Image (cartoon, one colour):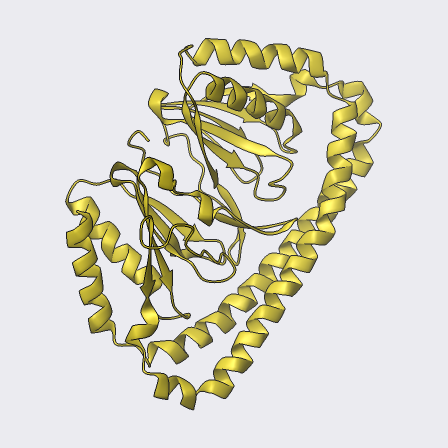
Length: 353
């Protein structure tokens, strides 16, 4: 992958439940190495990764930072594409186990650095907080899953009002204009640029990810999805390595972007959460029958309002879960030997860089 410096989410609290691409951010067949961290909350996983990022960047390496969707200030993974290495949190809800143990993946067991006697003394509190945290995440997930049918209803309405022939023709012209033909076998990585988090819906998208950015303005996501799918297939069939951006709300149904590092080119969706300043913009309304769309205006509006309310309930619940998680972390922090953990970080950095 070409050198590209930006932040992405590898997991999403979506309308379809929690969706994870942690196990697909590296490829054993092309020489990648994965370090999978196992350890409880508060055991220093994020701090460990931030330390490695600082050391790597001081030596000229580029790191892709992957924040946690349940705590955007914390890291869930770091990726160094230049040395084909990823270090990730492999614990629930994005559990990752080795596919090729010892060859591609290595386990970093942070349990080696905690005092089990201290944890046993606090076992009742740890169990209570763990159960409460799980309950709150299930509650948040329930709110989001309730919104799915409303979102599907809106997408079905928009599909009826879309001029698909015009859209397909435009998409093909867009591909030919921006993506030079070449030969080869394409490669795809999958990421999110938005996340439903305790801080609300957080966007990591911006028009500085690549030198050139083409923006599709589309609050609902259907028009941009059709364009992105055409770009995706065209780029892969011409041998490009791409980063496909899934929609954080409906990852199985919608694409929000395609990034082509080799061309320093990105196609990104502009929504109510992700806005762009200095880019060419394509407006979705040009592909829609606006007269027909007016017939569904009230229904679309009510559905959207309810979706936003359910999403707000979910983010408030995730905020409460984050507070419980912070209490849980304090139980583990008191039991950790962070000097030994720092030594591990220094030793690993020497190996990597």
